[in-house]
Image (cartoon, rainbow, N blue to C red; front, side):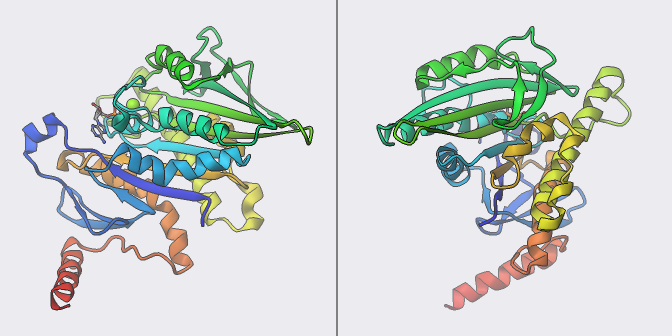
Length: 355
Ligand code: ADP
Ligand code: MG
């Protein structure tokens, strides 16, 4: 299995989208791995991913498929990164946190509270001779500056590399998570500080001290709720808004390049992965490559009014597909006309009828 898993999630239509365009959507499900999207010119594109979560998908479905295997690996001291990508309003924060972080409805809880529960559940079932500590840092990257969300006065955190700990956020506050309730409570107060034009990063470090063997192992799990990927209007935007957008675009392309290099690159090229091109990729360096595991959740609106942004989000996530195609194991068809795809689908349906 690849170390990089890429999924897409379509949120339900918002009430505004429904008001504007009724129940129209620009996507069609082909199966649980392939989706067809129609652009403004009614041209259809098919994309395949490890899984497509459609509007009716549950928070638990996303967690179990995409996140839980990575949580289990963190306990085995394998680093992992879980990233939500997409335009503003596409469902990144809903997927990552839930409607709010102290959401009491189990069903609505997002990835973050489930990870906290998952880590503690793994700890509870482990051997008595192992002592665990879980720590959490929370920062945002805004205009290529790293700010500590637990202590806003630390507004220029440096990313350093240590021989023993790997990449560290030098001087960033680390909260000890001795139980779930404390963890969620401490998050909820800080959550609103994060700007929507910044990348929000939750870094969990799990240390395991084996009392009998006298050694410490550690695993890092990083959750990233990215800034919106939307293009800014070439005309309207100026000044700060334009600068923000340019900086976000640059770091998102750097992330795309790293993921591409990781999934397409030959082992010989592994030395040339461009981690240093942005604060984001630098911060993720030892949790996004090598032995570590990565999950990318591309979040989209299903509304025709957002088709062009959704298409570019799917293209971002599908970059991996290009290389698996080279290896001959991709079933996806890209850039086919919508009519052709519909034809294929109806052929398939007819075949099923005959059976
Ligand atoms: P983003 O973080 O990408 O800007 P949000 O996560 O804030 O977007 O989602 C925008 C709106 O859509 C919010 O009101 C959120 O509650 C709602 N939403 C997003 N995804 C879902 C979903 N899967 N089910 C129900 N509501 C959702
Ligand atoms: Mg958000």
